[in-house]
Length: 293
Length: 234
Image (tube, rainbow over all chains, first blue to last red; front, side, top):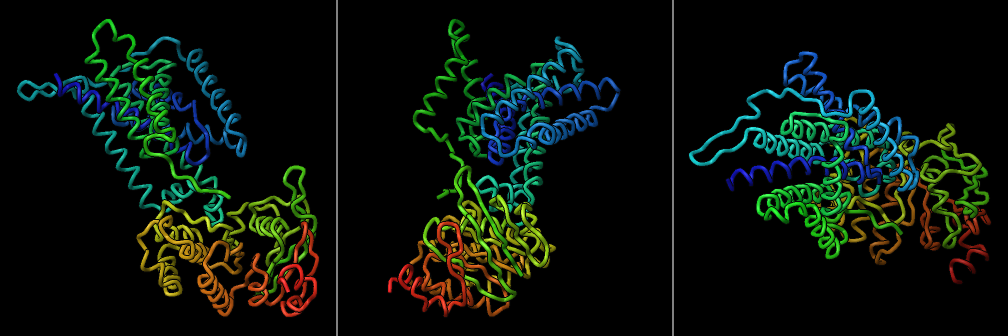
């Protein structure tokens, strides 16, 4: 029972971490809090549904769905955010709200406002048993996928030139451009990565719920946003730490709160967030930003 | 090699640069001097593409580069070492250098270039794996110049390289600038320390309130009454 709860907590934390990381990557580079991030997740969910309906084998469908998330993120930057480059934080924020609302309406009217069932392979809903322990396959896969994605991202950011340039751009974008590295390449890569992470998170989310609906991305991305703020907005290690922390606290409260108090779970979590920000306004692991004179 | 013609720069209502004309010949060191707020850094910013020109032209090697993006200008061989150094504090010295040379040459050539640069800046070899933010001010200035040189620029724009450095470090930095010039690099140097700038430069341009008030060879300016009274304290 306890083992199962820990697995659930880490698995939910992993999904939040992937989403928070996607938000943080984009924020660290363009200063945009992308509220349409949730719609990238929803879009990947529908892409999975469509691929399965079209009869693609499951691995291919997942690949298609995740790629759709990544491409949609790049397209979103190209169409909605690039014309706004250099605009104020508020204008960027409003733009992302507009994109988000637009996509939600398209999903509602173009597909359906009701949840659509996604036929996940039966092995995903199974469980391993070790003596007294029973551990779900879905949450275990979720943990492995999150861990691999985090490692792959870390390697990319440390080893590749583009990754290094992205870390530098989070500190001082102008100077990266002075090195001859094109701004559009850095920004497009940031969106591509955030879309990939949203796509992966969508797969893990759908795997546990076996359905897709137009508002699917809203709650997890709201949580991821909170995680990113708690971690330190724009800080990548902070986003990961915040994501896991939030997921673990949510599941633990869910498991331990008495029935009468359980409905207040989110209120308790958010009060905790306020407490953290009162003590550490820059978040748990603040982002590095260049000091400008 | 570089000519700036009737450059004007505005920040909103404020005219930071009213009119600047200057030319830099191949292999020369030109000093751009003047008081705080005279428009020196804005002029460099406009040459590098960081600051938009309200009017006027910047021509490099016969090509009009006015209004090009900073990355495009950098690829043409103009490197700016910005005021305050602005090295990437969270990146290692090695990564700072790597980014400096990343787009200008294939990876194998960039490694050779890094070797050349480390010969020139032995201190950076010692701190290769150290984060830029942990270096001292002088070391950061060396890193900022080294990073700019990684891309094999033909011209380098130095913005206040002596700012905030201890006197003996200033000497080291200026010895290095002289050495770069001997290697054939063209240099446009912005400097508040006028005496030092005139010592090293071939020619100098004096800016005041966004306009050129005086220009000539460094020797002429060093002996001019205006410069002696206003900037050299003589």
